[in-house]
Length: 421
Ligand SMILES: Cc1cc2nc3c(=O)[nH]c(=O)nc-3n(C[C@H](O)[C@H](O)[C@H](O)COP(=O)(O)OP(=O)(O)OC[C@H]3O[C@@H](n4cnc5c(N)ncnc54)[C@H](O)[C@@H]3O)c2cc1C
Image 1 (cartoon, protein in one colour):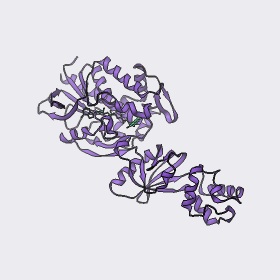
Image 2 (cartoon, protein in one colour):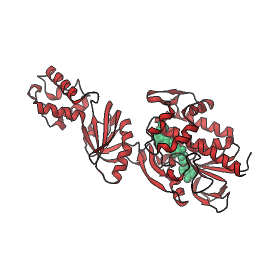
Image 3 (tube, helix red, strand yellow):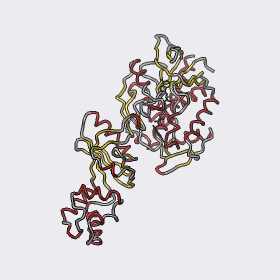
Image 4 (cartoon, protein in one colour):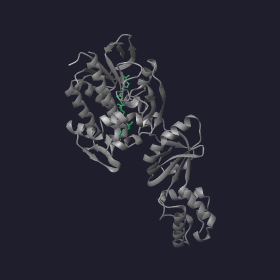
C-alpha cells in the first residue's frame, strides 16, 4: 500500500474509471465532482439507455475516431470493449448487442451503468467529494506538489498525482463546462479550439421545417466544403424545424463545424435513392410515369417517395405540380432524377455546444503520453476522457474511449505513486 494520494477531477466515465483503477492498485484516491451526483452525462447517454461501447473488432476501432484515433491505440489495447463488457458484468450490468454492434445494458437503463461504477468506487475505497468545483491547479516546484483550489471556500487540497477528467464543453448542463481547458492552459498545455461535434445542422433553406419529424432510412448524405466533397455517409437522417439531424448528419457535422469556423461554404447533398445509378433511377421514373401517365405530377411519385416530401421535390423541380405526366418532357424528368440524387442544402451553422454529443478539440494530444496519459510537461499530471482532443462517431465509441483512457490514467498514476513512494 502506498502513501501517495491521487486526486481525480470529474466524476464522469473517464474520472470514475480512473479513480477506481488507481484505488484498486493501492493508492489513496479522492474523486471530486462539481455536480451533486456522479455520471450525469452517462445517465442521459444513448437517449437514457447508454450505448456504452461497440461490439466490433477492437482492431477496427481507431478509424471510428475522426479526432486523433491513433492516440487511442494504447488505451484501447489495454482496456478493450470485451474487457469493458466483462467489467460491467462483474459489477452487475448484463449487456446486449443491437444494430451496428451497439452495446447497451440489458435493462435499457443508463442509470444502471452509473450504479455499477459507484459500486466499483465503493469496493475500491475511493473517497468521493460531490458538489465542489475545482477552480485552479496549483503547481509547486518540488515533487509531491500539485495542489487544487476548490470552491466554495477556496480550500486547497494537495496531491502527489492529479488526473483531470473534466470532459468537454458540450451539454454543459451535465457539468462539463470546459474547466479542464483552463487548467491546461494555465499549466502550459496547448488546447485545440473546442468545437461542437455530433451535432444537428441548421440550413439556409426553410423547406426542412415543412418536413419536421420525417426520418429517412437508407439515404446517402455527402458533405461539401467550398464545392469539394469531403465525406459521405449512408444511413438514417431526420428533418427538423431548424434543418437536419439524425445519425448520418451527426457524423458529418464535425466537418461542417470546422469548415464554418473559417467561413467556408458548407453544403449537404442528400441522395434519396443511393442504391440506384442515375440510369437506373431514370428507368425507374420512366416505369412509374408509364403507370401514372394520366395523373398529375404531384400524384405520381408515391411509389418512389414518402408522401410528405413529394410537394417539396415537385416545388424544387420548378415543374407545375398539376402537370400531367404524359406532358412531361425528358429534360424535366432528368431534372427530377437529379433532385432525387442530389437534394442540396446550404449549412449555415450547427445547433451549438448545448446539443452537441461530443466536443472535438481539447487538450493537445502531442503533449500527452498515450501509453500513460501523463502530461509530457508536468510529472504527476494526467489527462483522461473528452477533455483531450479525441472524438469519435456515434455507436459507443466515445464512452469506450473515455473508459479506456480513464483505465490507463488510473493505472499509470497509481504505478507512478507507488514507484516514487
Ligand atoms: C446527450 C448525449 C448522449 C450521448 N450518448 C452516448 C452514447 O450513447 N455512447 C457514447 O459512447 N457516447 C455518448 N455520448 C458521449 C459521452 O457521453 C461522452 O463522450 C463521455 O461521457 C465523456 O466522458 P468524460 O468522463 O470524459 O466526461 P464527462 O462525462 O463530461 O464528465 C466530466 C465530469 O467532470 C465534472 N467536472 C467538470 N469540471 C469540473 C470541475 N472544475 N470540478 C469538479 N468536477 C468537474 C463534470 O461535472 C462531469 O461530471 C453522449 C453525450 C451526450 C451529451
